[in-house]
Length: 315
Image 1 (tube, one colour):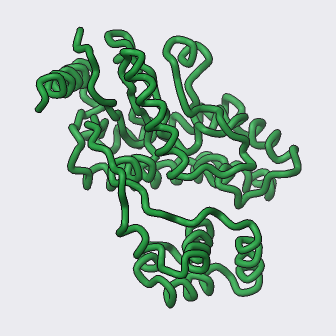
Image 2 (tube, rainbow, N blue to C red):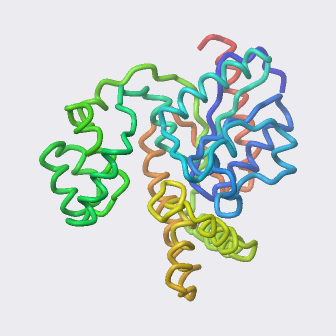
Image 3 (cartoon, rainbow, N blue to C red):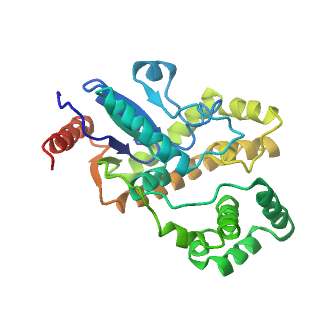
């Protein structure tokens, strides 16, 4: 497959467990690609098992970007991702290689394709104040406060979604305007084609997710989270520790009750996959490949060839 020069990146999206890494490595067998991770969990160092991070051999086989770039104590925003991904993609294209954006963090894809609004930076002091109020009143009450300031954002958030409620309140106070209003003023989106790996049979994905979480536990997920807890500077409400799998393992270590961990982790992973698929099915730019089809890989490569051919033809 010789389709150089490459004109723009290609996105490879899909729910957790769809096999995105394997499909990406398949592409790397036939094209000179560099993989840009679109995953809000893979950015963290020391979080390998629960994130299904590519193995050392896989990382060595193909250049990867935006993996292991920050400490779990730190936050990483969609805005930071977009800036980094655009810069890396331009550099990869300049090297005559294909930037392949691979992942399942749909917020990152959304920010990339729709552009970013001018959101205020995080304010540690204000967040501490909001956390103190939440400790006194509870997050449902904080959700009620948000409903008065920004009813549109509050309507799409669960009353106990502490992380997002905190951020929405923070934006309201810092910007003096609702987050929903700022979201309407986006700029700088890209029009990069997306191949979407979606199972035709949802039960196929559910079986994979159950086996996957059981394998993570066998590989030492609890030991990995135990080591993170032992650092002493991390806590359960950090974005890193709220990642699926880590949140359930952290809670099990706190309570000492491990009997339902496999079930709870699998349920949370299924819920994540459902949210990812819902977002994908509303994405107009996606080209769907049934990842549970025995011919999925050749179909995916054929789709990729059509997209690159169309780019070179200027269509």
